[in-house]
Each structure stands twice: as C-alpha cells, then as structure tokens.
Image 1: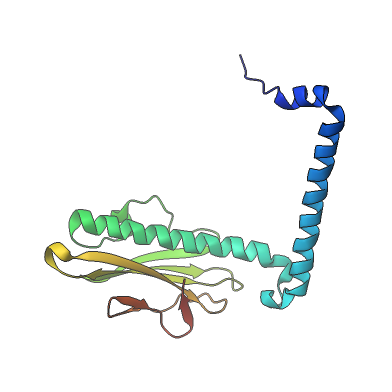
Image 2 (image 1 turned 180 degrees about the horizontal axis):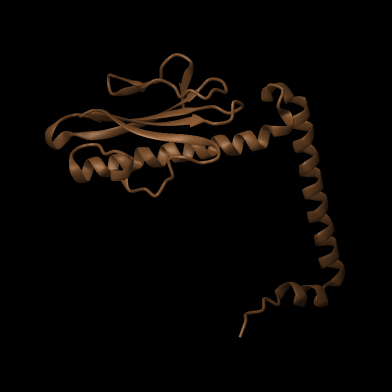
Length: 178
C-alpha cells in the first residue's frame, strides 16, 4: 500500500484561488531568478575566459577534482591515525577510481611525514589540483594537517607539492590554496 501525500490536493480544493496565486508567485519567482542569473552571467562573462557557455559544466568538473582530493586527504589522515604511516592508493581503500572522464588521480607518500594526492585534468579547459597531508608535532602530540592547491588557470598539470612552513601549508607558484 503506497503512501499518498494529499495536502496539496486538499489545499487546492479548499482554497483554489490561494493555491493558484501561490503557484503563480512561485513560478514568477523562479523565472525572475533565472533572469537575474542570466543577466549576471552575461555581465560577468569575462570571468569564464571565452567559455561562457561551458561555465557551469567546467565548474562541475572542477568540483569533482576538489571533492576527490579532499576525500583522499581525509583518507590519508585516517590511515595515518590507524597505521602511523601514510598509504598508497590501494591501501587507503576509499573506493575512488584512479581514472574518471575528467581527471587522473594519483597518491604518493612523499616521505614519512607527508603525502600527496593529485588530480590531473583530462580537459584542457579545467584546473588541476594537488592535495597534501603533513604530520606536525611528534610522539603523542603528532597530528596531521591538510591542504589543497588549485592551479591558477586551466592546465592538465597539477601543482607541485606544497610546502609546510611554520605549520602552515603554502602552495607553490602558479597555484592557490583553496
């Protein structure tokens, strides 16, 4: 027996003019919002560097890269807590494919106190990413910190490994911390 949500039907029968007005107002609001968004987009098309029609697609692809690198960083942190060392892609066991339609992902243990994850763009119109996990402190006071560097422009090459300076992650030239 399926559940039927009858409230909109009851509302429509009890208050037909209010229901119609409500739908009209909602429809106008959605249309107006779409118009504002389009106007804003057209006024700011320079932001999209000649690919204004692909802006949302590019942002969605880049969101994949950012979120995957963030997940790999968190997995490295968890792996370090459990094993007192960093792991390779397979050891992290995150269920992330090293290859997608948008990115190639790699994980590397740089040294006993740092690990790197990279997202190399397959599309020359999107940015690449490098994530880093560093151990700070020692013994019982050891903990990890993470950061993600985004290339300043679209490129298939991920940023170089960030540096740890006074317990702060600094992205290399040509990239910025996000």
